[in-house]
Length: 236
Image (cartoon, rainbow, N blue to C red; front, side, top):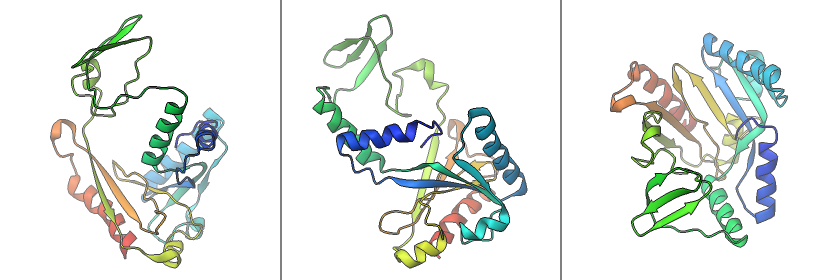
């Protein structure tokens, strides 16, 4: 979730309004494994507090980390009480049901092949066209050539996911003593998404690889080894 102080409350309100079981879990931990990353993490926390008035995040110094993470690897961390995780598919399907109940018409299987912006925009499909005052591009990175002006601003990304065997509630709570559901590693030049704890006490580790133009990024070997050590640690 983002850092808009009203964003989380809006999402919760939508879940209540449309009876969406999004499996929301409170809390988010960003952790740094090098002194430089620890400094950047502290600066990030300070920026959120001073520039944006966000008061729900705090720095966790190294001496305090064992209370949060069962690992001696990390130099510092930040806990964001205003963020968390949800089940994106359940949330999306719930929003779709809610929208349909309000009279919104949803057409699937009608691929948009061209968008012609204007005061009244036109979205063309293979079978016809839709004219509307607003167009929302919700295709993630899969827009293809639909909007050529955006193509140069989209970076190819590969995501790899590893999952542990079910650990049981006792072992899972030992790994994160305070029971927080998300842990993000700030390591190297690589951005690792959160390592979430699932409802059945599975642990997952994910690594993002940025491969501009399909080429491996410099330093992949070292970064990959560090990234997948997180996956191994979760399943030890």
